[in-house]
Image (tube, rainbow, N blue to C red; front, side, top):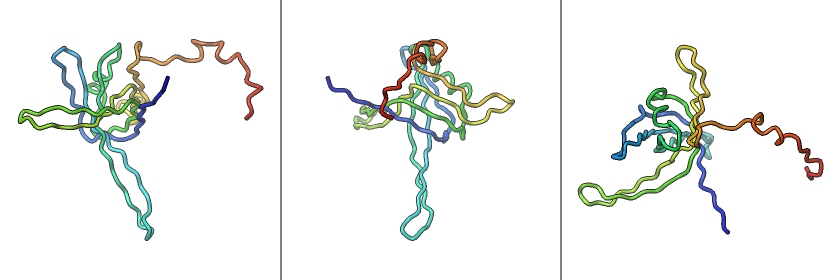
Length: 152
């Protein structure tokens, strides 16, 4: 059986307010525009910078409220961490032209910007059922086994 991995991790800033809407089936979805930048020195030593814009999609499904989180707490300029998968879609517009888009479908979002009013940053939401992450307290036996025979 062949295995593969489609995983994207971004840390960037929102370029605009989240766009939140509902599908015809009633599921809420938010679309974010996230900017990431990289910097380097060219051959003459001058500092260069390039910004990439990413379309990130957050769904309210499987017990998660990612779209609601975006609507309630995120604003233009906020720094966020996004983890998810990349998807490529095509569709026909009203004029019959084929359109293409690349999206990051978020599985987890962590807000990194300090919040006004003393709210803590680092709010994490996962799209997995239950919306949370397990801790070692939930699996105490995970720390019991020693790995003395490891070669490193």
